[in-house]
Structures are given as C-alpha cells and as structure tokens.
Length: 71
Image (cartoon, rainbow, N blue to C red; front, side, top):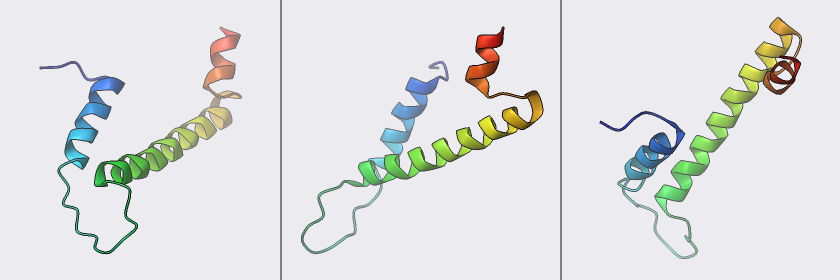
C-alpha cells in the first residue's frame, strides 16, 4: 500500500476524475473531465486551507507562516 501524501492523493484524484463519463455535446469543449475535476478540487482545497489559516490567525495570533517563523 502506498503511503498517503500529497502526491499520492493527487494521483488518486486524477485516476478517479479520468474515469468520469464525458457527456457534453456540441463544439468548443476543449477541457477534459479530468481538468474539470481537478479544477473543482483545487477551489475546494484552497478554500479549506484559507479557513484553516483564518482559524489559526484568530486562535494563535498568526497564520501558519507567521507561527513557523516565530519558533
């Protein structure tokens, strides 16, 4: 079993999104379902990280970068 890290998570997401059915019809569709899925995930992931950073700022008086520099 592969260790769970950022690289393995992205690899698993790509494998999953590449199996999604492509049901769009017509002309002008140049993005694959893999691209659409990864884009949607990136928005979710960045929003989640931003909420985490905001929580750190409120609780500890600084975000992850600031706290790491203080230590």
